[in-house]
Image (cartoon, rainbow, N blue to C red):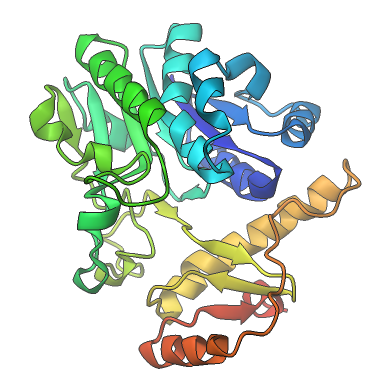
Length: 316
């Protein structure tokens, strides 16, 4: 049995459900603990009665330490702050041997158990960004990405997890300060600071917009485990933005068209059980600003203007 946890609110509901359904499609034995970060998502997820899932409300999860810092952090910063606490909660509450944290905007193409098994006798698994050189943000955003992390319920694993939780409770903001950034820069020195920390070697895990340029997704010898749909935005005017990194036609056809269709199907299913229309955190159209066309032109020239009509991605 592989235990996973994730967190999201109703703005990320379709993405979180797509992650779950892709995990279910490719995993034989798993359980997913979903931390519902608002009442609407909690009620909807419970109504759906998902297999292999435990839904946890904020009121059941939050402790005094988290509540003490909640008001001084943005919604995004608070999610980052809570990440190590969700893993710790699952391990301790349900007496798990290990727990793997998943970002809600991951999508699985094969069983991720192969990534966890790579740990062998180690206690913690972390994933590098593996930036394409022109996008290298290691010095600011961190060498590693929180997207997929495993902690074992042993001495080394819990030592790292408790250290990370304490650090995030003390400071976790969306700014660069004294070598810190959010929950992520803390990971930079873990392989030397702690014992039993393993750096993922399988290149099929951790594929993301900032490194997909390095891989040929049509190569039958490359086994994609998961893709991170970072900065995928559903816009108000029936358009989709697929991030700000260079993507080629294969990336769009193999990854983004599939993902968009899956989100659309989930949206239709949700509309049958809920009357509120937005399950996607739709980005509202911004008032005209004179620099915006210039920025878009610059992105277009660089090949990073990844805005498509939704119908185009849906094949309509």
